[in-house]
Amino acid sequence: MTDAKSAALPFWRAKKMSEMTPKEWESLCDGCGRCCLNKLTDVDTGETVYTDVGCKLLDGKTCRCTDYKNRQAKVRDCVRLTPRNVKRLTWLPPTCGYRLVAEGRDLAWWHPLVSGNPNTVHSAGISVRDKVAASEKDVPDERLVDFIVSWPGKWPKGSKGKGPVAPQTAKGTGLVAALKRAIKSKR
Ligand code: SF4
Ligand code: SF4
Image (cartoon, rainbow, N blue to C red; front, side, top):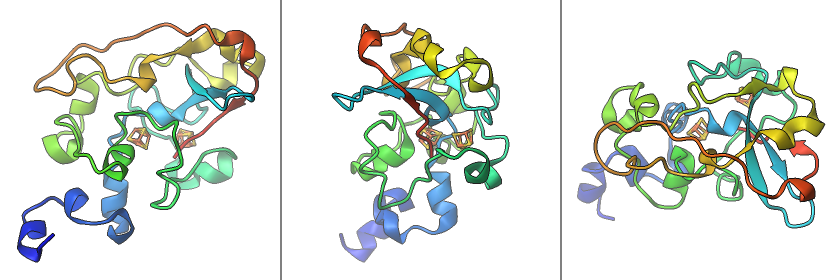
């Protein structure tokens, strides 16, 4: 890409992830909170499914971590996203800003970097607002299978287009028998 062309592009299109400043890197997060939901991984197939049980530090209204600075000290399996690991984390939601940019795709209209408004991630039905059924503080690991949901792995209807859409929810899959221990895989 020529310098003139890259200068006309926003940073997430013009730069490699490894070239982004810490501020730019952090701003790729749309604030959806999906990655802060507990997940279950099939130990045989490696398939990961989401539950609607939130991390103990997830605020279900703001969809933000309540102690982002100390998150990794407080939540052992909170995963820190880096330019190196982002492509390996196949469980990242399809809507995730890091995943989209790592795959060479553009951010959607509701991403705060595009809309200029941190609320569009909620109005577009992308975030976990009002969709977190419980906190992991209240759900033992062996009961997580009762909370499997498919919506965190999907784009809500209409969210790739223009304008606000209603949030969608969908109930769990038939994988329950094969699933074992949860991993919490987060940024
Ligand atoms: S899924 Fe991606 S965009 Fe959403 S909160 Fe997690 S890191 Fe941020
Ligand atoms: S998964 Fe990590 S970033 Fe998300 S709420 Fe828990 S500690 Fe915070």
